[in-house]
Length: 413
Image (cartoon, rainbow, N blue to C red; front, top):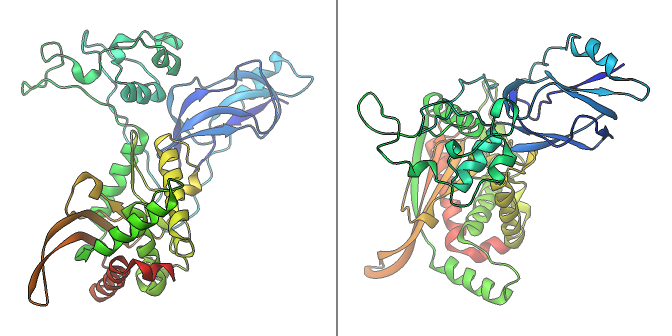
């Protein structure tokens, strides 16, 4: 009997997703493991592989469709000996409801309202485009109103953006005279929110409203760290290059190993203390913020941490992370020092209890034994969930972290 291909649940909290692209086409012979399509979730665009074999007889959900429920039928496969006349029965057969998500420390996501559809700045008419096409257009600076769609009913799809002429006018460059005007008189351009931005916004709002934050800041002198980094990189002869953030991640991991009372998350029945320091690293991508994880970072050297972060950040920006690579983590590091930000407070990433906000290393006068000297100082602010970590625990963790940062040789033993 023909079988449904169902919308998969690519994470424990996923309830719906966008069908960004069909890789396989109607009429293709499919084997288990073949890539069928690309699904856009709240965190990434991921390839979906077939679990059955047969002929892809009918695509039920076209690419570019948004808000497709988990377990909804998206296509029909025919087994050997079956033909298209059998499709009708299976296409109308009932499909099991999505299974309930396994209870866990993170609250299950609820569907969020759809973002406003893009509007042509020239005609004021709504533009129909797939989520993937919108993202590619934003990345390439292509004005969707200048693109003719080749998809169903003129919908703009990925191929249309890839084939857009060089020099297409970016949406941001629309003249004030031709842009839509708000009731208050200001011209504007709507930039649609993708799933990543919607879910990130929802979780950050919930964290700030429901988690009792408090903040602790320490000043770390990093002259020894900078000298050690220069020597290590010089000796590497280009084989690798360590960043200040690599040292920060290693110092956090070592501090959590030495003081696991800060490596926790809050639960109504118990505070969960973790065995390993699984460090989430905040990475900005064209689609929004994502936090890939360096697992068991306390067991890894600086070079391995550096290599993993470069690989994870690169694949995060390409939307190619697997769910287990960004879901979970026990502690987060957010570093804005490369942008010249001296100090900031970060919002906790639930169910974690701590996030460390790292500022830029800035040369400034310091007093040492009654004398004024110039030192490179880096401000680090710990945002803490007061339910799981109290002030004394947070302060002691920062003392240990500061000791590692200011004496980088201690991280090597």
